[in-house]
Amino acid sequence: MKKDSVDAIIDQWAAVRPDLDTAAMEVFGRIYRLARVMGDRTEKAYSRFGISRGEFDVLATLRRAGEPYTLSPRQLSATLMLTTGGMTGRLDKLERAGLLRRSPDPHDRRGLQVTLTEPGLTVVDEAVGAGLASQTEVLSTLDDEQASQLADLLRELLAGTREP
Image (cartoon, rainbow, N blue to C red):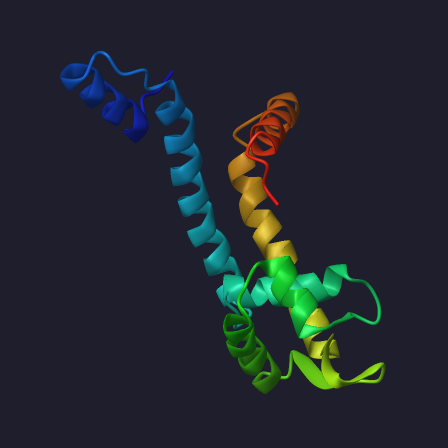
């Protein structure tokens, strides 16, 4: 099996601290590096549509909500784990681009609704396809059984973190 940059780090630790058990570093070092590389590739795929990964997340959350593709800013903030200030900046940019619109909530006169526009629907549908194509290309280094096994193992690992 070919050595990677994480193997080099593990070898260095073994030379200076042979008492350390670096098994966790072997796993999480690779997860971290893979997440960083794939984040950059995904960002590049989305940039072709004039959006960042964070902006894609907003559009995708509205898209996944189903018709009429509407959520409150509070629902968006909770789903994306963003502060209201961070959410406002994203919504402002996406609204200026015509990809979503904000309107008064008919059920709460103090509230707002955020709705995906037709151009927003087109952009998010094309962007999700481009992002998945980039991810699928990298995942194709594994066969179907390996990819499924990896997904199952990562699910178990994530469940062990008690992620919200």
